[in-house]
Image (cartoon, rainbow, N blue to C red; front, side, top):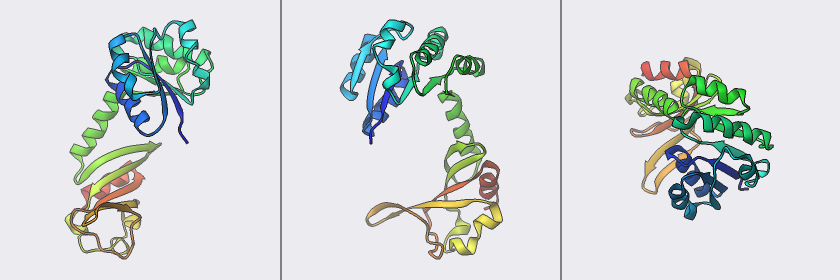
Length: 221
């Protein structure tokens, strides 16, 4: 079942988010004060309008209270506008507001005016990239909340020809292999791992664990 999203601010982050949500079958309404940005996104979303997000009357016409999620994606160079827009979305009855922050101070203010969730795309990407570069065998890392992370790794050479049952990764490292991605004659196949099927060179493993456990595995293999 598709969900309804309202995205205010069509910089690189807001535009990318809108395109991706629409691509996955969601109803997306976008708004920005820049007519060029709005025109560029219009063919890809349900509706695109030129508005000033700090105008309460105009913002109310977009029906924030009727959307599943409202996103204030206004860039960090317009912090005052992003703070006002976030506050207005909450006052207009938005059920869930996600706001983009430029730094920790900005993030605290956005939370204070009512944002349910605050993200810093540049900081988050930098942290994930640092982990990918610093940890051995890592393809990607996705935080799952709290201390849990989903870590995708290339099976190290010590795994080749050995089974999940033999490796005992949960006992030794505290990690759970949630899925395995393998390239074969039929293309890429992702599936639940068979504990008695040996890993092959090139296999990618999706691990669920505490961050420290995933790092211990990558350093110890």
